[in-house]
Length: 368
Image 1: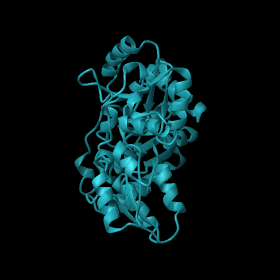
Image 2: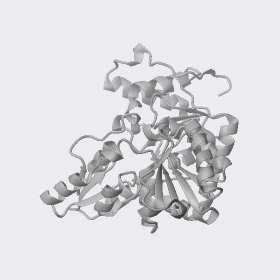
Image 3: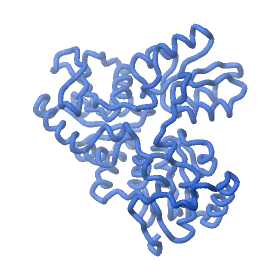
Image 4: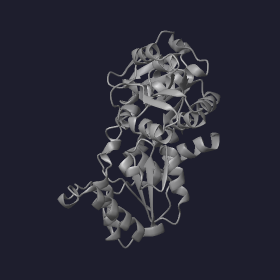
């Protein structure tokens, strides 16, 4: 949108967008979207709130949406209803002339923020001193562009919760050891599923610059886990599973691999967001499910499949608070800005970071 006025700094929502009725929000969003036509594509993450995701042209997980955005070459603007690292990935995979917009720049990700590039650079020096040139870095796509670029420069790749096993199998063919970041639980659960014992894993604490939770000798380590986690998925517990089974032995428990090791081991099934959706879609009427993932998705599954009993594993709400910052006021504001020729809250990754991030992403896509 070269003719538009580009506003690159995070902007505060104007008061005029704060107190409209539900009907006004819906009508104005639809009207602005219609005016923009094929020039606009709206992406909505699975964890997004219902009153926003209903306006999405495509729904999916973070990487799936970024890949779809890359195929939408006719769109001048991509509004990403997710969190910041997802919009970065979309910008990395976008085409010249396209802009990527995050309706509210405060929509970050606590897990992604747990892997800081300066801390990683410092940790890498120590890891190289301790273990030599035996380590390849792999980062979950739930990480910043700077982390993806680091991984790309050092011969590594990215992964999703769906393809983490295949990516780790590839990584072990390159080097003896894998540094997995930023989510220690996805790394641990995936490696254990592959037959790697906990004694061959160690946790790197980036705050103290020390190794933690290692039970075997350093020379036997194969998986080095960055001490990060998802604030939503770590709220689920084995006690919750046990209490549910006591009340209803027929209920099946399915959880995301970002949950802790004990929870994944106690559950009946564990897998990515897409896996959870697939399992429930294929289940027969009358099936009973307790789902350990973000509450917006669980409620949407329950609404879509009334023939089954579907509930959140926890008795308390587990929303992704930063994801929920994307709301109709911010969506309307950014869409109407485009109608007026203004780009508000653009997410733009610098060329050098984008280059190496894309190399990391492309390696993953070639593996998968």
